[in-house]
Length: 353
Image 1 (cartoon, rainbow, N blue to C red):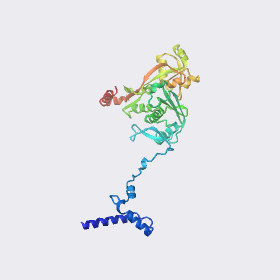
Image 2 (cartoon, one colour):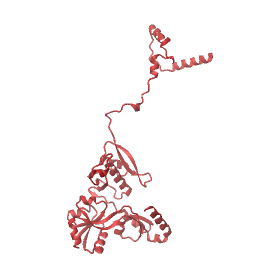
Image 3 (cartoon, rainbow, N blue to C red):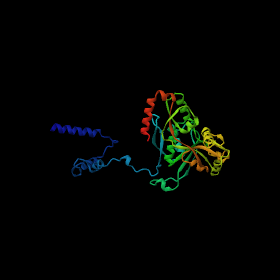
Image 4 (cartoon, helix red, strand yellow):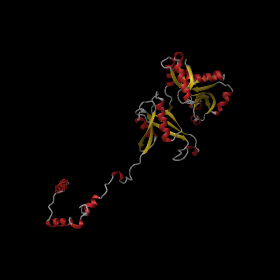
């Protein structure tokens, strides 16, 4: 027991010596006697500590996370950004902090995520139609109709994939509460290159056995291949559109001018179905401007929601045909790989119902 007591005393002395040493000041004799008195008797706690030492040990540590926030700190907004996933096969989303949510900020984040090319800027961004519903308010309760955004960019790859276009559209629609987004490049409607036409070329010449394209491309191109299935998505209509005043010239079979991106579809409709002689004018840009500036009486174009027509004072006058995504097959492959292709078609029909 004595050995144990001596060992414990030695340990306490070692701990005392290991403590941080302040700047050494020799105490006076009175101070030494006073300190010795304070260390004795009733002034000691059960642990052998003075009241000051006990209070110091009981002080709670300050957690820096619990410090009072700075009332002058800047409040950040959040932007939901759509981007390509790691495999490039689809989209994923990320939340990014931003000082303000505007078109320039959103476009800059899309550049950062490699959706838009470096140096792309916003020429203009306008919203027409409905008002923002706001938190906890159903959009239908605003009674203000469809909310449409028009985004004009300084540049956009003409071969941009559908995934990239969806990322742009989804990002703007989510952050600005839009029902749809119309995309322009330097004031002209973005149409891109005819990627569906490339798909038809690959399938027609046997580089691919099967392809998926829009019905409008199939009708316009007139390629030698089999259309085997209506996939149902991407549904819209090919229509004859114009001002209400043009309805009379359509009904009277008068010679009129028709502006369109789809001259073969327009020619087939007017010549073979309506038996009406027309002059076809091929355009690639904003087809809706043709009747407004007097270039044509009517247009033939794809109509989805009709919002662009209404904004330009035009209406759907006649429907040419319904459109949607279709599966096409190479003619030789259909004969040589009949069993495999028919099995795929059957499985797809079981999923798409």
